[in-house]
Length: 207
Ligand SMILES: C[S@@+](CC[C@H](N)C(=O)[O-])C[C@H]1O[C@@H](n2cnc3c(N)ncnc32)[C@H](O)[C@@H]1O
Image (cartoon, rainbow, N blue to C red):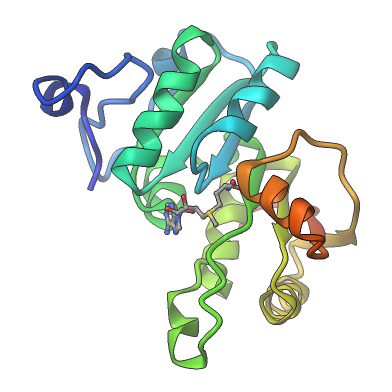
């Protein structure tokens, strides 16, 4: 469910970086919401917002949207973003937001860092990366836009790559990418767990 500032404000002070969604079916008017027209980067499952905010500070000429479904995490992210003019937060299920709320060809880059791997076979259907999900990502990406994906889960990585390879709209690159550490990235690094990265770049137009 989307969170709106009005409904949260009476429970606890919430800085005004949370987007109020007026419709669950209309595309977001991004230029109006951010108050300027510059390329948009979207962090899906932004967790505590540390990666999102570090990146937004590094790239003040881009707009950043963090999407996260857990209320406490989106609140933590919103507090971190309170001093950053180029960051907004949306509390929502990520696939829904990409599919229904982001306009076609509106995103320069998505980040999907350490999506929940759901390691048990019977839970695999809960994983966010599916052919439909990557189809919606493709539609929301600008020409030559890309999505960066990181995971420590070997099986999920293999599956994501397989799904990406079956979509002719993407060029795939396994890459080490110079980005700020996310909270989970830091945790895996401290544990010495290997992390695998994929960059999927949109190479064909939206059909
Ligand atoms: C393992 S954590 C990674 C958080 C952050 N990306 C990082 O690297 O520190 C996964 C995050 O994705 C969020 N999440 C999982 N599925 C989601 C979905 N379908 N829509 C939005 N957020 C989701 C979880 O609530 C959690 O905060």
